[in-house]
Image 1: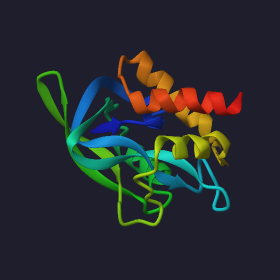
Image 2: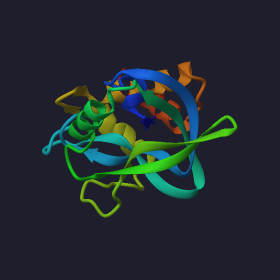
Image 3: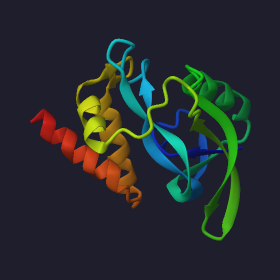
Length: 173
């Protein structure tokens, strides 16, 4: 069983990993396009979390994680509890490339028809929200900074997250 990580799964998979590889998912992009009313915000003051948003000409670089043998059922149950806290994410299987190989991975993508979908916010609007939102798992800014830092450590460029990280730091200083 393989799982594709593009956000917090990169720095906190939460399951036993037997192997990990840098992977590319075509036709999708990483985007702060989901209102967070649980983990990084509240109903009164929603934050933003990353989701895979469909975009034919785009791609998302992330990490393919192979679940440790024997841990597949437990991993699936825990991922569903974590990722499907609302019905904004759709659980699906997508094909990623890693070097010359393709791998089918479990992935969580945004449902663009869901009320928590907020695609199309400008980067400035995203920065203003992320700078101030706090949820059950802590400040929204920590989620952004952890994701951006781990992408950089892996050598994965994401200009939008890099810009947002800098902008949010500026807003808070």
